[in-house]
Length: 223
Ligand SMILES: [Zn+2]
Image (cartoon, rainbow, N blue to C red; front, top):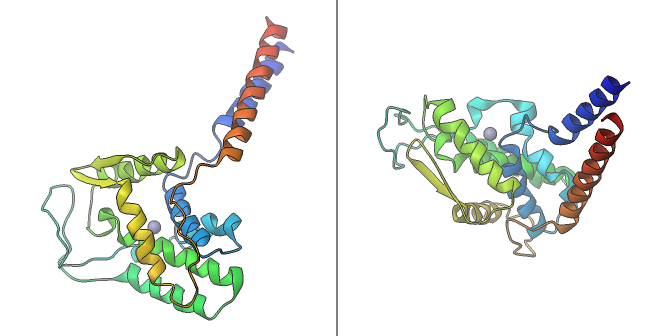
């Protein structure tokens, strides 16, 4: 019985602590798309973050998540290779999905806009502008750290990997640049990129509190 109770509490702990551990970049794309949705007063705020990750989660067309621009500043490094030819695959995807959105209404239009936003924000990331980069040393660490800041709702940070840095302040202008491209809809608000979500915080806080209480009671029973 003791082992069973202990096993159950470990299981519950794992379920609560380790929920979506697989995703390490999708909160960033989600936060960016959510700002676009809020600014345009779109009615699909619940789904927009998920839609913005469709290219990574569903299409998995990583070949299209890059823009190579030989005119862009590219320092030489042993960690990556600067592109030798122009290739704007991601930008073409942005246009493709914005054109498609223009033909649609409501949330099906916004699904395409969210997908377009994914490709757009990828073009802004240094690691999507160079080739043969050291993925684990540079690219993954960068995305992971940025994502953590978005999850924690931090608004004052700089992340550097392999000598390439990005700051929080760079993200908002990217969103504004993307919003300019949505010429067929009207922007109505200018909302902050990161919004403190108190409701959610208390909700999670409550879960953690009741979880601590359960563990305490179990420990008292089995000891
Ligand atoms: Zn991507």
